[in-house]
Image 1 (tube, one colour):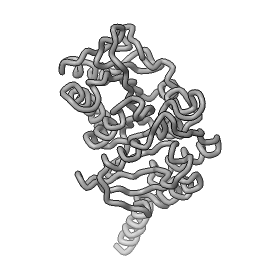
Image 2 (cartoon, helix red, strand yellow):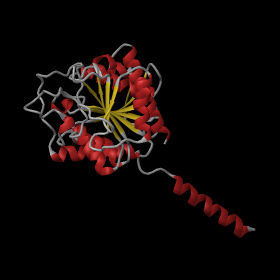
Image 3 (tube, one colour):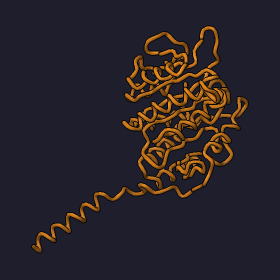
Image 4 (cartoon, helix red, strand yellow):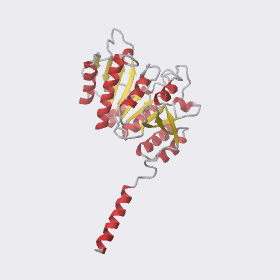
Length: 303
């Protein structure tokens, strides 16, 4: 009997040790704020303009930023904070006053070039199952607002925001959808490494050759999963005119999008969504588009 009791105690101790979290796992960031999440994001993007300066981060800066985000995704908050501090970024645990939900913000809060590299917002109350990507805030009007809305409406998400207007800086330096030397791309790749699918939000002006409300494609992949096909079906059922890139010749399919190319290499779902002005911002069409996208992300969160 004494032997059995001793064995039981040993097994219990081993079980406790194996269940213990890794160093830093589950710890909240040292910095914490109570904020209105929507206002927090839109105040940041309000300062973005085509005449702003922009210099992309160097290779070592991108690598350190990606490593920091990777540790944060793994729950190793302390190491994430250390690495990100080296490139001037801070991790802040935000509690949204409107919903009570918690988010971790990765951002450069000091004036300087780092502020124009963008931001990351991660749901802190669950694992990360999808990302909404906004590569052209302000330039593609209201895509930043749609990104926040999706983060608020669907569980288990990440919002990746570019920090500069696509025409800022020299040449196409700030067009992060077509550049690999950006913080935006480094963060999206870090999510893709973990199999996190993404929806990238764009906007276009309607014209005679673009008579659509939404153009849905899969970037470098010429096919669509049942979930993505269902997204287009839901949009169309709600009265939006949709062009499907995998079954028709559509403009603006995003076939040269570098995040889409990376997703293809990593066998991770990537959806490139172009929306007409009426399908983003306010109004019935915008509500229907947001509801359909939120439905896709909620499905991903359940997978």
